[in-house]
Amino acid sequence: MSLNVRNYNNKEMLLFPACIGDYLPKGHFAKVIDDVVEHLDLNCLYKKVSSVGNPSYHPKMMLKILFYGYATSAFSSRKIAKELETDVAFIFLAGMQKPDFRTISDFRKNNAEELPKLFVQIVRLCEKLGLVGLGHISLDSTVIKANASKDKTYDEERLILEGQAINKKIKELLDSAQAIDDEEDKIFGPDLRGDEIPEELHSQEKRLEKIKEAKKKLKEESLKALNLTDPDATFQKQKSQITTGYRAEVAVDGKEQVIVACDCINEANDTKQLIPLIEQTAHNLPEISEREKVKVSADSGFSSIRNLKELESKIYIDAYIPDVKYQAQQRGNLTDEDSPFHKKHFVYNSEKDAYLCPNHRELTFGYRYIDERGRKLSRYSCHQCQDCKYLSRCTKSPKGRTIKVFDNVNLIYAMRQKLNTAHGKRIYSKRKVIPEPVFGNIKHNLRFREFLLRGLKKVRAEFTLMAIVHNIKKIAKYLRKLLLFKLPREDLIPLAVA
Ligand code: SF4
Image (cartoon, rainbow, N blue to C red; front, side, top):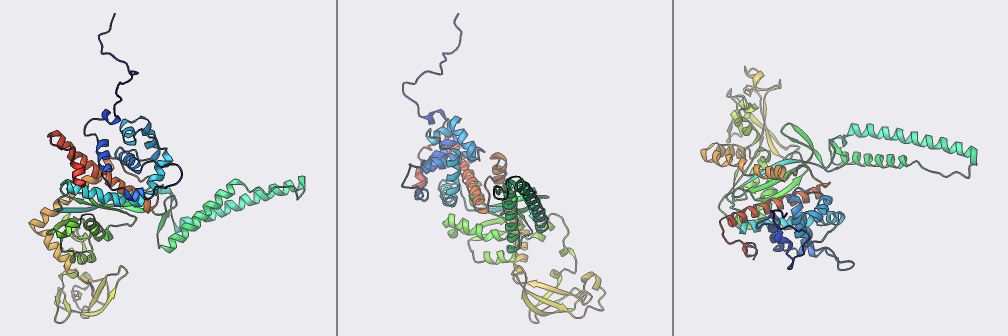
């Protein structure tokens, strides 16, 4: 009896062998990666290919499988090597070649410095495809866990205690080795024994060496704590959680959420990143400086008087960046500025270079100085506070009130005024919807929640890889849209690159 089924034979030979790519649907992400990488200038990678010995795998192929790996949450080189055996998209991108995991890992490690150059090319490709509007750029950061255990983070006290414990252990091991030697001397005579150092002693000595290095680094860099697994990782606070990790920084264009600048830092806040991210954006997309006032928004973590002062020289930027206290007030929290005796309620008299307090008494100029954070400020003091009925509310000092006035503090107040307008509120309200989906995509969709590599340099490269993959996903989404509306897309990338 014959079965009413379709003819099935999975061992049948094809008359005309198909291209592996034919097994992937049109518009598949692997095909977009293939297209994009084919049109990148990879000279920076080609220069590193050795002209002697066995031929290397083609950097183009290695890059494609690395990009596809990070786009499909196959971050480890072992996982990528495994996928090369079974996954059609990987097999297609590799052209059926099978580099082992060590080769993949070495390629990623050896080309870490080239990734930012490729990132720039991808950003420019996005711009040529019309995915970057340069109307509104928003800056943000997120904490990503380091490849390091929190338990391996040591402060100075813990390092000292650990060092003492190891020294004790080493002494015990040496004593026990000596006891064995003495025993063997009695049996074999002093000339016949071998000086076997117990293996554990080596590992304890290595550990002690690590602790000494960590103590030195803590002292030299004035750090409070240090992780022994990844010494570059630092304690990072996000919301109420403390993580041993890094801060991933991005500048995102508002049109299609393309990342136009990125970096990774091991500092505890974002203040020093505002200007570098803006300058990196201007480097990646030079036409920004010809634009009329590109809106830049960032949260209070990026605010400082120094930043606002530096932005004055970047005339193509129209910034919307609240300071910490303003942001707290907007959230309904009380700050010291809510006190009627806060210095912002003291009125300046430029002719006298003096301030008038709420009780109409004068604070005269004392001296100027630079604080520990390098900020310039002036100090003013009141010499008529003793009989003031507000003394206890105004100051804790029995000598009377003094105020410190930072240079250019007026820039903070001017920014507040701008943010308080309907226009300012509207622009700033867009900040949340521009960069946050980017981190949502990277951490949630791509499941990149922990770095695989260790050390700031490698971590930077790894995050650049993620930013590249995020942007290629944006290109893929755009091309899929064209496919949906049956618009021509085949020559789009070569045209954009040309
Ligand atoms: S304590 Fe001094 S500065 Fe404060 S309100 Fe009184 S007089 Fe003015």
